[in-house]
Image (cartoon, rainbow, N blue to C red; front, side, top):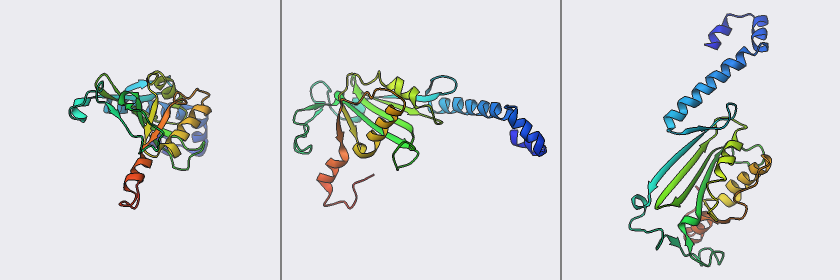
Length: 209
């Protein structure tokens, strides 16, 4: 609609239009409407202030539907002293873990790389809970960070795939840039990529995703 309206303006009228803020206002209304529609489509919830809204998506899956015949209290653990080369010498309970992954605007890392989708999974009350934060624009990650810090206070281990060298350092830097405390600072990190390489490096040419 805005483009058709502008097509009939001369240069002076276009400059006055942009200077008046009408273009910015109309663009903001379109963005707001798009985010609301996307939230409904994803069956999520809108979080944050009007200028920094993000979409939070929650899913819950019964453990019985994912792992056959498992009880988180009695058998929900890993024992991997050899695979972890002595880093994890005790049994690791599944409900201590937070599985996470990021989708970002690039793979270079550094302050210019921005996470636009943050996903976290964790076991709790015989369920696997999945939380996803979708950031539709820049400058909105603080809303996700403030919300996520309350979810993982009883956890102690991060689990990722190649997260030690990319995902977690990027996430940690974003906390610093937003002047927030890193809620995972004291967590141990279990990077499954290293395990996969130890098991299948002689069979697979490339163990990365």
